[in-house]
Length: 108
Image (cartoon, rainbow, N blue to C red; front, side):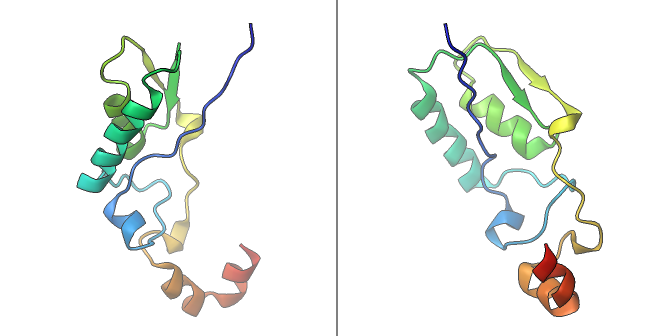
């Protein structure tokens, strides 16, 4: 028997929509993100999933909860799956970061 790992990104947040750096800042799913998680649920319906792991950030936890709601699967929260900390970039748009720190942005 082989093991398959599915990597799934969380649904949309308002900060995703406005292209803001989120990192460890806990931004919840917006309505579109919740709808995306419901679509994911349908896409996964024929998959045999035995375990789910997620970041502790609410956007990731809620995506997992919505997409796996009709199953009896434990969702394991793991701090090691938390996004990186963007420091001073957190909450800023890509354009704002490019203007303030052009060299650092290019290196990133």
